[in-house]
Amino acid sequence: MLTSKLDESPIIWFPVACFLVLFLVRKVLWPTVLDLQEPPTLRPKIPLIGHLIDLIQMGYKQHVKNHEKFNMTAYSLPILGSKLYIASSPQLASSIFQKRTLSFEPLIDTFVRTLVGMEGHGLELWTNPEFRTAIFKVLYKGLTGPSLNDLTISGVSNVASSLNRMPLDQLELKDFHCWT
Image (cartoon, rainbow, N blue to C red; front, top):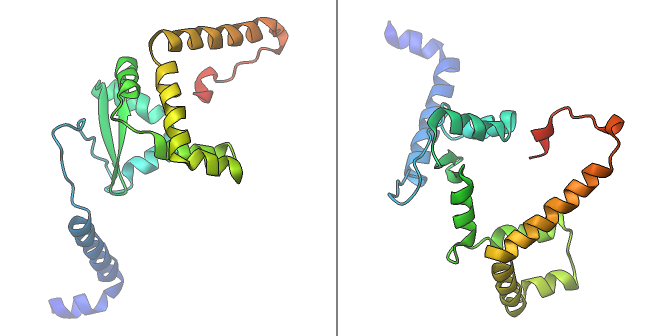
């Protein structure tokens, strides 16, 4: 009697079997490895894609919500078998950027290629290891300590002078923080 009911409902059992197989394949191919030096992991409600859905729906507000709910200076979000590390403290973010062992070169390559639109000879020059070493030396020296303070003061002064030139009747703020 039980087998006859199971035979009659392949529509239910097929998706369940597929989900079970995918779950087992994921566990075997991409096991979750917890490293003691990593920040704590916030588990998603929906495995694999939960945090991705939240990021798409809520954007930066997801990080604000997580910070208010868990009050952590750093945490990691598992997304599609990878991990996204979040630093919600300005001091921690600053120390991360000042570490010489941390490399942002792969991200900068993507930025140069896609957002800046560099191609041809400029991209060849950028991918030259000698050129990159020289550029990163300048960046690391120029974007730390007093040099960074001077750059920040200059940038904030330019923004302030631009805002001061705007007439008040043109100043319409719908969501001031949406650009961050």
